[in-house]
Image 1 (cartoon, rainbow, N blue to C red):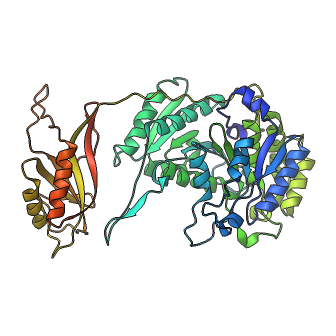
Image 2: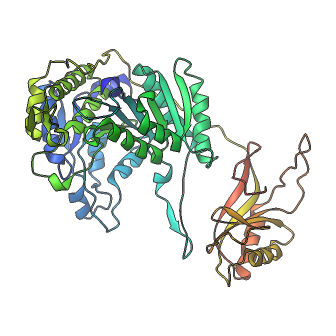
Image 3: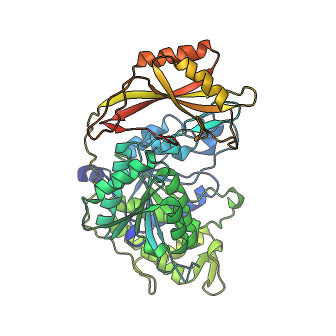
Length: 510
C-alpha cells in the first residue's frame, strides 16, 4: 500500500476516461467468490461507480474442455472492458491443463507484474516494520515461455527466451513507476555472472535505461545475494525490477517477510488491457466457510482504481483498511492476542472497512496518492536491423555407446567434419569433455558438439584471430554426414557474430 499501490496505464488519457467505469470481473474458484463479493461491496460503498461484466474462467472452464481455463468468447469481454479484476482460480491436477495466469499475461501482452509490499507492524506481525517496496517483474518471456523438450532418454531442456524489447519495456516501466510514485531507487536483479547472454542482456539494458533517469538511484544485485538481502534487510530496497522467474520468487519472499502472502495484491500491466488480482491462491480447504481474508483482492482493486484514474477512491479504501487493522478487526489468519479485538469473517471484515470509509489510520502511515498524476507511458526504442555472420554450429547428439567415452565420439566427429569444419570441442551438461577432458566427469547421453570453419578467417586489427564464415549449405552437409554415420543429432544452434560481436557462450578453453 502507501505510494506502492498505484500502477498506471500506458493507454491514452482519452481511452482511460472513456472506459473509466467499466471492468470485467471473474469471481474465480475456492474462496474467490467470497472475497470478490466483499471487495465489490467495498467498491460500491466507496463510490467507485463501476459497471461489471462477468467473465467465466478457472476450474469450471477447465473441466468443460478448455485446457487454458478460459472460453474463446471470454477474450472479447476482456477486450471490451480492458480492465480485469480477477479472483483466484484452481487448476485441476493432471490432464495437461495450462496455467491460466500465464496464458492471459502472454496472450494479452501484460508485460509488467507489479507487486507492492508494505509491512503493517505491529498489527500484522513482521520483523521489518519499515519495509515498503515494489517488485516489478517481467511477465511474458524467460523460462515462462514454456518451451520444453525431452531430447534423449536422460536429458530434458527448457528454453530461456529473453528479448531486447521485452527487457526494455519492463525496465522503463520500473523507472517510470518509481518517478511517478516518488520512489528514490530502482534495483536490478539478474544472474549474468552465469547466463551472460540472457541475463546479461537484461542487465546491460538496465544500465542503458538508468542513464536516462539521473534523478533515480540505481543498483544491481546478483539474484542469489539479492534474494538473501530481501529476506534479511528488505527495508534497504525501494523498487526492484527483474526477470520473470526471479520476480515470481522474490515477490513471494517479500510478501511473506512483510507478514502475510494473504495481504498482497498485484497488477499485470499491458496495452491496452490490464489485470488485477490477489497474489494468493484459491485456498479450496477453507472455501465456503466465510473466513478468508479479502485484503489481497482489496489491495488489487485499489491498484485497479489508481490505474483507472480514481486515486481518490483508492485512497479512501486503503486508509479505511489500515484503520480497520489498527482497530483490531482481523480475520483468522491475522489473529494475535496482543492486537486482535474482534475476530471476524470475510463479509464482517468488509463491513467493518465500509464503516471506516473516510477515516485515516492513527499510527500506520496514511496513504496519499496524487489525483493529478498522468498515466505512465513506456516507449521502446524502434527496431534496428543487425548484421549477422554465421561462424559455426553447435550440434546436439544423442549418443550412449559403450562406456560413453568422449574421446571415442570425438575421434568419430573429427573424421565426419571433413574439410569444411573443425571440431572445436564437445561438452556434456555444459562441461568440456573433449579434447582434454577429465576422466572423472560424469557424462549423460546428451552431447553438444561445436564445429567452426576449418578455413582461416585472418586477423583483426591488433592481431586478434577473426572467425571465418560458414554457409548453411555446409551445415546441412555436415548433418547429412552425421546421419550417414548413424549419429543421431537432436537439434542445432547456429553460432553468430552480431554487429561484429560474439553472440554465443564460450566453452572451456576457447
